[in-house]
Structures are given as C-alpha cells and as structure tokens.
Amino acid sequence: MSGSLQLVEFTHDQLVEIAAKWLRKKHHTIITEMVTGAGEVPDAIGWGSVNQSTLIECKISRSDFRADAKKFFRRYPENGMGQKRYYMAAAGVLDAADMLAGWGLLEVKPNGKVRAVVKPEKQPANIDKERCVLLSALRRIGNAGNVGGVSIKRYTFTTKGIATFGVVAETSEAQA
Image 1 (cartoon, rainbow, N blue to C red):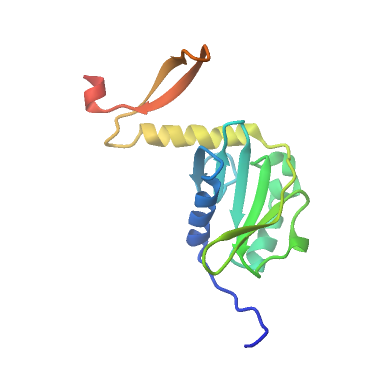
Image 2 (cartoon, rainbow, N blue to C red):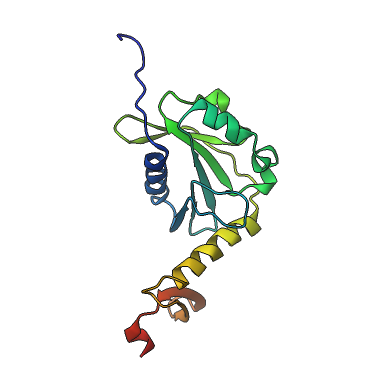
C-alpha cells in the first residue's frame, strides 16, 4: 500500500470520548450524548466561561455524515445547538469541502491527536435547547441514588463584589 492513506477506524464511542477531552481544554461544562426533550442529541457539547457553546458531532463514515446533514436542525441552523459547530472524524473520512456552511472540521489522527482542519464560524444557537440539556443534566444529578439531590448555594467573591451560584452535591454530612 505504498503511497496510499491507510484509514484508522475509531468507534463512535471512541470519537465522543476524544471530543469531550478536546472540549475540556477550553470549556468548563461538557455533556456527551444526552437524550432530552430538545430533539437534538449532541455527541459532545461544552460551555466556556464567556457563555460560548461548542458542539461536536462525531462521524465514523461519509454516509453517517450525509445522513446527519439532512436533519432538521442542520438544514435550519438557527434551530441547532452550539455557537461553534464541528464535525469530528478519523483522518481521511471527511474533507474540508464536505462541511456545512459555518461548520468546522476536527480530524483525529491514528494516535488519537486532534487537528483542526477547518475553523467554524460563530452561529446563532438555540439557547432554549441548550438550556434543556443543562437542566436535564442537573435533574439527573439530583436524582442520582447516592447523592440525594443538588444543593445550589449562593456565595460572593469579596474581591470582585459580585454574586454567583455554585453547584454543590448534597451528602448525608451536609444535610445533617
């Protein structure tokens, strides 16, 4: 096979894990493959400190990519999640020319390293759908059997004089 590119195959789950790891570099909150009432199930979505959301859709084949492009929220991007949107695939599966308008492309090399091939443009995101995913995550944390709920505690940074909220999992000690 001299001169030809040998594709390394990744499973969808492996790509989602790589996407989440990549998002952690610039985002504080990352959620993967959460089914909610929002209609869209993002493979990986993250939110950063400047209220920036980034969506990554992982594709293991060109046919998977073509099927994704037909979805309602791809055809009408204002209904989709993520102010920045990427497709992620193994190197050689997708090309820059394949990308939907405004979408970026992340290529995963055989060693698992990620290379940004196309940078995305900022797009309007459906904040209601994003909120649905975040609230669903909080509900699930609150319903976890051993946690007993989520306690939202208010605290103030004295150095900056601004109020904010922190999420602290309740424990039996904290409830005592």
